[in-house]
Image 1 (cartoon, rainbow, N blue to C red):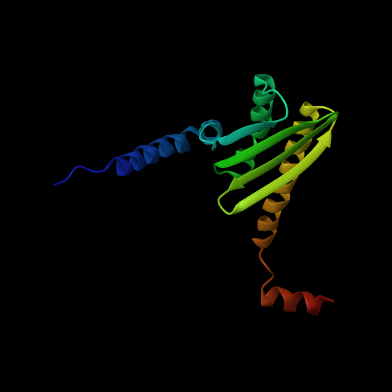
Image 2 (cartoon, helix red, strand yellow):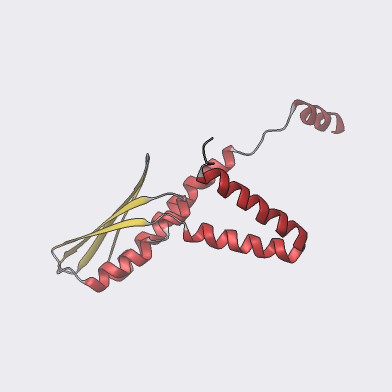
Amino acid sequence: MTAPDAGTKKRKDEKRKMNKIDKQGKRGRAKARKVRRAARIADAPATEVTVTFRHVEPSEAIRLYAERKFAHVGKLIKRPCQAHLILTVDKYRQHGEVTVKSGRLSVSGQEETKDLYSVIDLLADKVGRQLKNHLEKFKAKKVRSPSTGEVLSASEET
Protein backbone atom coordinates (compact mmCIF):
# COMPACT_ATOMS: atom_id res chain seq x y z
CA MET A 1 0.00 0.00 0.00
CA THR A 2 1.26 3.45 -0.82
CA ALA A 3 0.46 6.60 1.06
CA PRO A 4 -1.97 9.00 -0.66
CA ASP A 5 -0.26 11.82 -2.49
CA ALA A 6 -0.38 15.39 -1.22
CA GLY A 7 -2.82 16.49 -3.93
CA THR A 8 -5.45 13.93 -2.87
CA LYS A 9 -5.09 14.91 0.76
CA LYS A 10 -5.38 18.59 -0.10
CA ARG A 11 -8.57 17.99 -2.12
CA LYS A 12 -10.11 16.07 0.77
CA ASP A 13 -9.26 18.90 3.17
CA GLU A 14 -10.82 21.44 0.82
CA LYS A 15 -13.93 19.28 0.52
CA ARG A 16 -14.25 19.13 4.31
CA LYS A 17 -13.89 22.90 4.51
CA MET A 18 -16.56 23.39 1.86
CA ASN A 19 -18.95 21.11 3.76
CA LYS A 20 -18.37 23.18 6.89
CA ILE A 21 -18.97 26.37 4.94
CA ASP A 22 -22.24 25.04 3.50
CA LYS A 23 -23.47 24.44 7.04
CA GLN A 24 -22.51 27.96 8.12
CA GLY A 25 -24.92 29.64 5.72
CA LYS A 26 -24.70 32.77 3.64
CA ARG A 27 -22.17 34.62 5.78
CA GLY A 28 -19.85 31.64 5.87
CA ARG A 29 -19.93 31.30 2.10
CA ALA A 30 -19.25 35.02 1.68
CA LYS A 31 -16.30 34.75 4.05
CA ALA A 32 -14.94 31.75 2.11
CA ARG A 33 -15.29 33.68 -1.17
CA LYS A 34 -13.34 36.54 0.35
CA VAL A 35 -10.55 34.18 1.45
CA ARG A 36 -10.38 32.51 -1.97
CA ARG A 37 -10.29 35.90 -3.71
CA ALA A 38 -7.48 37.10 -1.46
CA ALA A 39 -5.52 33.92 -2.19
CA ARG A 40 -6.04 34.35 -5.92
CA ILE A 41 -4.86 37.96 -5.75
CA ALA A 42 -1.81 36.93 -3.73
CA ASP A 43 -1.01 34.29 -6.36
CA ALA A 44 -1.24 36.84 -9.18
CA PRO A 45 1.68 36.52 -11.58
CA ALA A 46 4.45 39.05 -11.24
CA THR A 47 5.48 41.30 -14.10
CA GLU A 48 9.20 41.44 -14.78
CA VAL A 49 9.98 45.06 -15.63
CA THR A 50 13.34 46.08 -17.12
CA VAL A 51 14.14 49.74 -17.65
CA THR A 52 16.81 50.93 -20.08
CA PHE A 53 18.07 54.51 -19.98
CA ARG A 54 19.53 56.07 -23.12
CA HIS A 55 21.37 59.40 -23.00
CA VAL A 56 20.21 59.98 -19.44
CA GLU A 57 21.61 59.12 -16.00
CA PRO A 58 19.83 56.08 -14.52
CA SER A 59 17.63 57.18 -11.65
CA GLU A 60 16.38 54.74 -9.03
CA ALA A 61 13.27 56.89 -8.49
CA ILE A 62 12.28 56.66 -12.16
CA ARG A 63 13.04 52.93 -12.23
CA LEU A 64 10.83 52.28 -9.17
CA TYR A 65 8.06 54.48 -10.60
CA ALA A 66 8.10 52.51 -13.86
CA GLU A 67 8.07 49.17 -12.04
CA ARG A 68 5.10 50.29 -9.96
CA LYS A 69 3.19 51.51 -13.02
CA PHE A 70 3.75 48.35 -15.08
CA ALA A 71 3.23 45.87 -12.22
CA HIS A 72 -0.51 45.71 -12.90
CA VAL A 73 -0.03 44.46 -16.48
CA GLY A 74 0.40 40.86 -15.32
CA LYS A 75 -2.89 41.08 -13.44
CA LEU A 76 -4.72 42.15 -16.60
CA ILE A 77 -3.60 39.15 -18.63
CA LYS A 78 -3.52 36.79 -15.61
CA ARG A 79 -0.18 35.23 -16.44
CA PRO A 80 3.50 36.14 -16.06
CA CYS A 81 4.89 38.65 -18.50
CA GLN A 82 7.92 40.79 -19.23
CA ALA A 83 7.81 44.53 -19.82
CA HIS A 84 10.83 46.25 -21.36
CA LEU A 85 10.82 50.02 -21.07
CA ILE A 86 13.31 52.20 -22.96
CA LEU A 87 13.60 55.84 -21.86
CA THR A 88 15.50 58.25 -24.11
CA VAL A 89 16.35 61.93 -23.72
CA ASP A 90 17.27 64.09 -26.74
CA LYS A 91 17.74 67.75 -25.76
CA TYR A 92 14.23 68.73 -24.62
CA ARG A 93 12.39 65.62 -25.88
CA GLN A 94 11.74 62.74 -23.51
CA HIS A 95 10.81 59.63 -25.45
CA GLY A 96 9.67 56.24 -24.18
CA GLU A 97 9.02 52.86 -25.74
CA VAL A 98 7.59 49.82 -24.03
CA THR A 99 7.17 46.22 -25.15
CA VAL A 100 5.11 43.78 -23.09
CA LYS A 101 5.52 40.11 -23.94
CA SER A 102 3.69 37.11 -22.55
CA GLY A 103 3.75 33.87 -24.47
CA ARG A 104 2.75 34.70 -28.04
CA LEU A 105 1.17 38.00 -27.06
CA SER A 106 3.25 41.10 -27.71
CA VAL A 107 2.04 44.66 -27.11
CA SER A 108 4.09 47.79 -27.71
CA GLY A 109 3.72 51.53 -27.46
CA GLN A 110 5.67 54.77 -27.94
CA GLU A 111 5.18 58.18 -26.36
CA GLU A 112 7.02 61.49 -26.32
CA THR A 113 6.55 64.44 -23.93
CA LYS A 114 8.64 66.89 -21.93
CA ASP A 115 8.71 64.81 -18.72
CA LEU A 116 9.86 61.20 -18.17
CA TYR A 117 7.23 60.57 -15.49
CA SER A 118 4.42 61.60 -17.85
CA VAL A 119 5.94 59.38 -20.55
CA ILE A 120 5.72 56.42 -18.18
CA ASP A 121 2.11 57.31 -17.28
CA LEU A 122 1.07 57.59 -20.93
CA LEU A 123 2.79 54.32 -21.85
CA ALA A 124 1.14 52.45 -18.97
CA ASP A 125 -2.28 53.76 -20.03
CA LYS A 126 -1.67 52.89 -23.69
CA VAL A 127 -0.52 49.33 -22.95
CA GLY A 128 -3.41 48.84 -20.53
CA ARG A 129 -5.92 49.90 -23.21
CA GLN A 130 -4.34 47.61 -25.79
CA LEU A 131 -4.45 44.64 -23.44
CA LYS A 132 -8.07 45.31 -22.47
CA ASN A 133 -9.06 45.48 -26.15
CA HIS A 134 -7.20 42.24 -26.78
CA LEU A 135 -8.97 40.49 -23.91
CA GLU A 136 -12.39 41.80 -25.00
CA LYS A 137 -11.91 40.15 -28.38
CA PHE A 138 -11.60 36.76 -26.70
CA LYS A 139 -14.61 37.41 -24.46
CA ALA A 140 -16.65 38.35 -27.54
CA LYS A 141 -15.68 35.10 -29.25
CA LYS A 142 -16.95 33.09 -26.28
CA VAL A 143 -20.47 34.52 -26.60
CA ARG A 144 -22.68 31.73 -27.78
CA SER A 145 -24.57 32.07 -31.03
CA PRO A 146 -28.33 31.45 -30.99
CA SER A 147 -29.49 27.92 -31.66
CA THR A 148 -31.58 27.00 -34.69
CA GLY A 149 -34.71 26.77 -32.55
CA GLU A 150 -34.18 30.27 -31.18
CA VAL A 151 -33.65 31.68 -34.66
CA LEU A 152 -36.80 30.00 -36.01
CA SER A 153 -38.95 31.11 -33.08
CA ALA A 154 -37.69 34.71 -33.43
CA SER A 155 -38.50 34.73 -37.17
CA GLU A 156 -42.01 33.35 -36.50
CA GLU A 157 -42.74 36.09 -33.97
CA THR A 158 -41.98 38.88 -36.43
